Amino acid sequence: MAHRMQFFLLAYLVVHGNGQHNEQRTNSRILNRVVVTVPRSATNAPPQHSPVHWTYERDTDDSEVTAADWSRIYPACSGRRQSPLPINTTLAQRDPMLKSLTLIDYDDTPVDDLWSVINNGHAVQFSGFFRTPPQIHGTVMGKYIFQQMHFHWGSNSSVGSEHIINGKTYPLEVHMVHRRKNDTDEEAQKDDVGLAVLAVLFEVAKTREPPNRHMEDIIAAVRKVAIPGVAVNATLPYFALQELIPDNPSFYRYLGSLTTPPCSEVVVWSVMKESLKITETQLNVFRSLLKNLAQTANAQASAPVPVALGRDLLLLNNHRPIQPLFDRNVTFYEAPNDKNSILRPKNATTDDARPFNFNQRMQMSGADTTWQWPSTTAASSGAAAAQGRNPANIPRTSKFVLAVLFTVWLKSL
Image: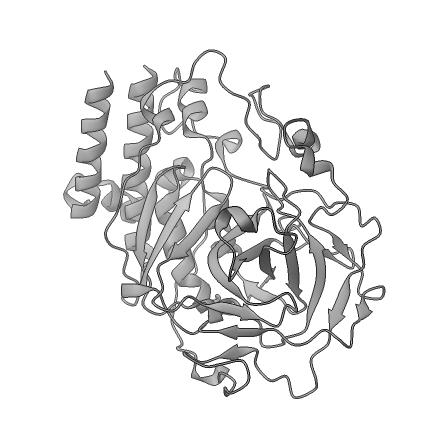
């Protein structure tokens, strides 16, 4: 029964996701090469006493270790250099030795514009293969190579970000993770300054403001990874990391840790002062993602799809509570009045490069619609939704994915 539930849950969300995307997509977005990665837990029911795993909020599974208890399994999580922090701008010290960040090749895109996107059950992560990987300089600790970026959000717009500025919490935060240039992955986890993370906060756009066009490419990809463990290769021809960098290069700096287990204290944090805008509709795409599929299917095996879907199954509030400052200082780099961009064009060096012109950014259009959970959307969206669910209108990619899922299901019987 659990296998059957998992299959129908996968099939429903694949079909629904494509129907929803067809209604909202624009001709400048292309998602292709769908790669379905079925985790072991999706084809085999977990044992009666499954291993303890970490999470953010307490759900129906008592074996889950929430953020308050991470240190029981991961001792570093109770260290004195933990992240995130509450930032008080009046207490942040202006450091004359702190220089502007320099972001090199942030205007570049991965090979074939291809991003690997996955919902790992804790966040949505983007990574790509670059001919010349983007770099961040100016951290004082050396040069760092881009590895991946991921997002943190809440169940509503009053929560979501991990860092808090002057008591204000933001609805979304993106972390762009970089590894020290001469370190291996293993060495970076043991190096006190092995990682450099650039954090950017988002605030909700006003009702009459247009949607964040640069985020529409991200949103199109996020829609494809509703199910944890399913990886999608997303072709985003108009998206580069520069689109997530505010115009104002001012930032806050402190030494901290990973905000997820094992909480390694190896991170040089740069939190941008200026936030970006995002609409409620765009935020709701993040809020529609699911978390642990195996627990979802087994806990709800007696209920039909999509009635089985509920808030407890959604990936929400994936933000760690703020941590004590202890004896650390938060410093501040204040940009000069001319606000020169911190971006450098492709193949530029730190000392000989012209700033990237933000006016050259490509403008894109995007749809802004009201989000609903799939079960209510199907009941209220009328003919358009019915057309999206009609098997005759299912895209070829969806039919292929359904065939793969059906084969996996048969083999698991």
